[in-house]
Every structure is written in C-alpha cells, then in structure tokens.
Amino acid sequence: MTAETVTTQTTAADPAAEATDTGPVTASLSPSRAADFKTCPLLYRFRSIDRLPERPSAEQARGTLVHAVLERLFDLPAEERTPATAASLVAPEWSRLLAEQPELAELFPAEDAAGAAEFLDSARDLLDGYFRVEDPRRLEPAERESLVSAVVDDRLLIRGYIDRLDVSPDGALRVVDYKTGGAPREAFEARALFQLKFYALVLWRTRGVVPAVLRLLYLKDAEVCDYRPDADELVRFERTVVALWRAIEQATAARDFRPKPSRLCDWCNYQAHCPAFGGTPPPFPEPLAADPSSPAPPARVTRRAAGATPPAQPVGPGPAGTPHGPASSGDGPGAPPESAGAAAPAR
Image (cartoon, rainbow, N blue to C red):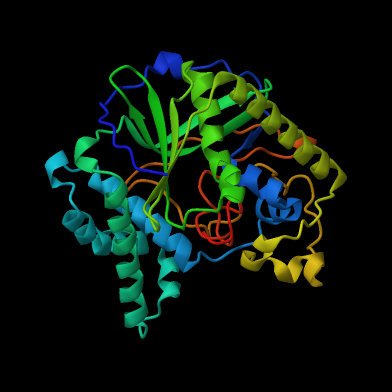
C-alpha cells in the first residue's frame, strides 16, 4: 500500500441534490452500531438498548485528539500546514477537549503528569505518521467532519460523520478516514472498509455519484489503503445493511441478543454482564426505554469539530414501538482502539 497525494478543490455541495423525500423514517443506523451487531449482537444490545455506561479509554481520547488537530490544521492557510504547526496544536486542542469533556481528566490524574505528557507525545507521533502519507499543503478538502445521511428500504435512515471528503476538478469523490491504530492484517481489511462503504452508499444515494476512492489512512504505521467501489457493489452492500437492520429488529422483538465470542472480547468493557464470561445481562428494558438505534450514554469521546452545533436528530416511532433516537456516528468507547469492534484487535 502506497501513499498517493491528489490535489483537490473545495466544492460546495448542492443542497437540492442532497435533499430527499425520506417519508416515514422509523429507525436509524450508523456504521459503528452496525459493526457492533456484526461483531457481537450482545455488544450491540449493551450499547444501544441497555445503554450501559462506558468510560473513554486513552486510545479513544488520543484518536479524538488527533482528529481534532487535523480538523484545525485544515482551517489554516495551506502554507502553514506543517508538521511543526500540527505538533503545536496538540496541547491546546487537548485543553479544549478537557474543557468540553471533563471526564477525560480521569484518564490522567494530577499526580500523573508524566503519563499525560507521554499521551500528548504519542499524539504527536501519530501526526508525524500523517505527514508521511499526505502533504496537507496540497489539499483543500471539500468537506470535513461532515454528517451524511440517506434513507434506504423506504424507512431506515443510515448516517455517519465523514472525516474528510475530497473532490477533484473533474468531480470525482474521495472519502478519507483517519485511523490512529495500526493497519489491520489482510483478513481484517474488509471489516475496516465496512465504515467507508457505508459512507459511499450514502453519498451515492444522495448525490448520484459513486466515490472514486475510499481511503483509509493508518497514521501509526504511515500506511494508506485505497479501495475503489462500483455501483453494483454498493447495491449489494445496501442489501447487506437492510438485512442487518432486519436482523436487529428481529432480535429486538424477540429480546434475543446472543454473545459472539472472539478475540475482540479482550477489549470489551461488558464482560461482567456477558454470559460467555459468567456474567448476567441486565433485565431487558421496557419498550419506552429501549432504542436499538441509539448509542450508549454520553461517556463516549465525541469527534465534532470545535464549536460545532450537533445537528437536529429526527424523532419518530422505532421498531417494536420504541422511540427513535440519534444513531452514533463515531467509534464507541470500550471497543478496540478506533475500531468500534469493526477491525483487527491490533488496532
């Protein structure tokens, strides 16, 4: 896998092209929650229905910090987007995150100054990896941290946040996702691409264009993984997403979410509640409390741009009479670093 730098231009999205008559949307699904169900149905239940709290990990906080720095970097004039500038943004961005999410301070108590310093240095190392695969001075992203959504199967809203969308002069789209973990082995690459195919499907359905390239940037290993989807593949992928949601609906109606033990269990925060580890799940929430399309409580590390206002969330009846709430867009805490349970354990 090799790096390939392409100069892009800023292109405003046509609101008319993105507007769709969604009709009666009854549920929503994000790539992270879909990946949870694929990885382990019981994990999906714990996060999305029981909403068991999770504390953010240092790995997730580091990923959020690096994303924030890259977001801020592209706010600067092209000539100022240098490794030194990125490194200088780490400390102030971390201070901002601590102010917005005070629970992050629990990661490094006041007496652990050395641990906090090491954490910030590790974020700078990941940014160095970014500059080894791209030159941001040659890029002008069309969109960053952009919420995209589309309705499939006439009633299911699929959505998520795209780290970066590049548009070439000829209108070709490139979806870019930053990964702060290591590059997965080939056996896990399809899982890593699941999220980007999700976004590609949304863009195709809302803008009528199949993205030319889906790009994963693995900052730890300074590697690039490019994938080129086509319309036929996205049709098949849409069927997969719809089938996945129907399986979630069936599991919700039957209150039957079974564990699926794997190597990913090593990173799971819910072992005390999991039958595979001798635990007992909590009682299944009553319909008004359950929301199979929503994430766990606000312990997760958010990845919104600084000062951004959360978009309005649609509200309506959900499956099995449950209320509908917002789907998570980013990786949830407790999963392997930066994976939401969708990639290799090494990440």
